[in-house]
Length: 150
Image (cartoon, rainbow, N blue to C red; front, side, top):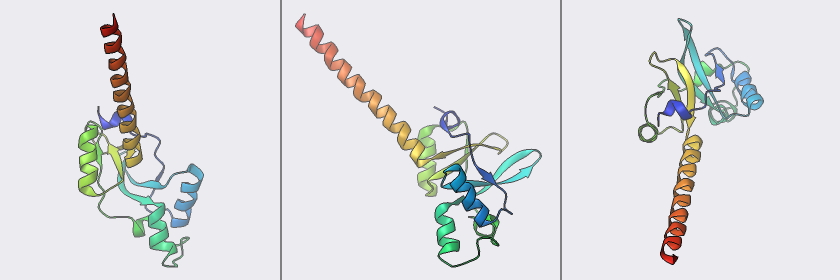
C-alpha cells in the first residue's frame, strides 16, 4: 500500500514568518501537535520544516523568549525529511526510524506537500491489520471445527 493512500491530507500549514505565538494558537484551534512550514514556489507548497508543540515549549517557553516576536523560521529544524506518496508503508516506517522522526510530510513527484503521516497513523494501521489477522485465525478454527465434526 502506498503511503499516499493513508496519509492525512488535512495538514495545518504555516509560513516561515508566522510567529511562535500564532503557531501555538493554530495548534490549539486545530487540535494538532505539529504544523508543517511551507515555502510557496510556482503555485506549489513545498515543505520546509515542521514545528511541534514540544519545539515551542523547549525552544521558546523554557528559555523565556518572546513568542510574539520569534518566528517559526527562527527555530524550525533546518533539515526536513519527507517521503514520496508512492513509497510503501514498510519503507516509510524504515525511513522514519532511520531519520528518527515521528512525523513525515508526504510529497508528490514535484516535491509539493500532499499530506503528513505520523507514528500514530502507522500504529493505527498496524493495529487494524493485526485485528484482521486475529479474525482470520478465529474464523479458520471455526471452519476446521465444523469440517471435522461433520
